[in-house]
Image (cartoon, rainbow, N blue to C red; front, top):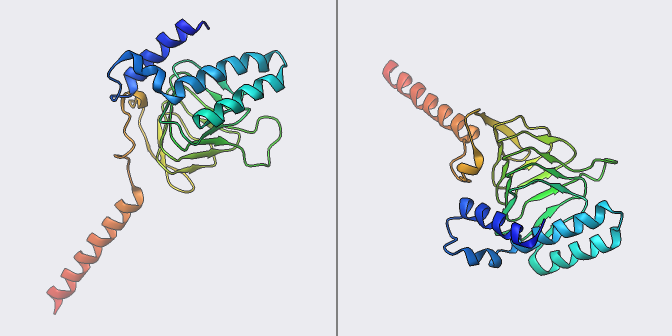
Length: 212
């Protein structure tokens, strides 16, 4: 990809997903803009077997912009990392089109696998701040991973996952995550159950009072 084409693509992507961008020239100020560009160059070298040169580019980028993307990872178009500091993407990670990550996200391994060691994110996946996805499995298209979650197993398409370990709390075929960049209003089944128990306790108290 030519740099001019990359600038055009990333300007459109960032404008679509970050309301803080007021001027197209701001695209050059985003750490992810440079980190992803360097990844694209390093990935080309990696595919040609020039592993040292590829890693050298990626490590320099990690030190400079705080985003570590292994050149062996496979990343589709429309990829965006908001803020970005502390993001780590492992060698055998596969990321589909139009995915969004926030700061502190890890797409890593568990240290136990051989070969394909890192997760696969299908198209339109949103991974919120501080989430960790560890291991070789698939996050289904259109899924949303809640902030701080630790995901250790397969996630079906269009699911919302929260918690440690991560669990599916919602599946909605109509959800389009990159149009709903909401990391806050996510279902909380534990709070729901606590509220239900509290209501039941109050109901039982009223019954006891009425029988006296």
